[in-house]
Image (cartoon, rainbow, N blue to C red; front, side, top):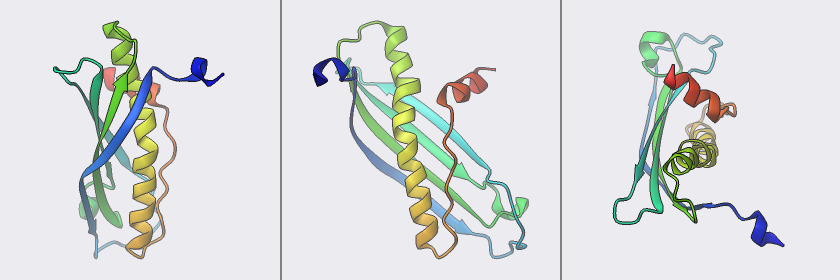
Length: 140
């Protein structure tokens, strides 16, 4: 029964490459809206056509002191994925850009919540995002 439900995209693993947290001691205690950006990069491995690396970098409250944010936080992760039975280049790209990013983003959200809680500030929970709209906005 589950054979026909299995995705062509297999999530192998992820690694946290870099994590930088800096508190802004000059923060003027006030309510601020969550400000974050997402950068992504896809690398299809030359030696293994079916494997790809998906790099996500999320920056929260960039330029904290200049913008009166409580802190700045940047996390960079790389996910390893494998595609099965997908030879079409357009389909491969779509799986990488949409599905793989959608799989990885919750890991970054969780890391941000955990890190902020563990540095003794109220945990920051990033909102879920629409990956398709993210891509559309990048293309405009």
